[in-house]
Image 1 (tube, rainbow, N blue to C red):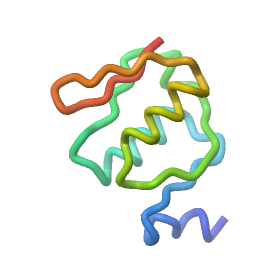
Image 2: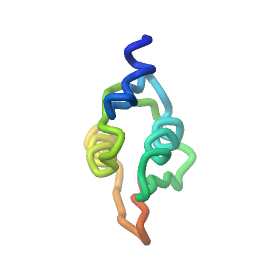
Image 3: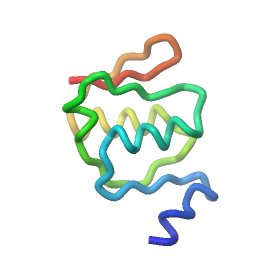
Image 4: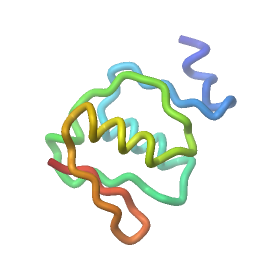
Length: 82
């Protein structure tokens, strides 16, 4: 668990059953392009995995593939929805 918490020092964010809202908030801390979740049901989905802190697209692609979400790039934001 300590390695997970210190992963950001290596540019890696670890999520263990975090909600998409929690994970997006953490990734947003490290990026100019922000992840927006405009559906409360999507925000409550849980994710488990390691993601590069600076790769918004990889996180969005993983969420899309795993949860069958829709991704829209809008005004410098990546919007996740059903």
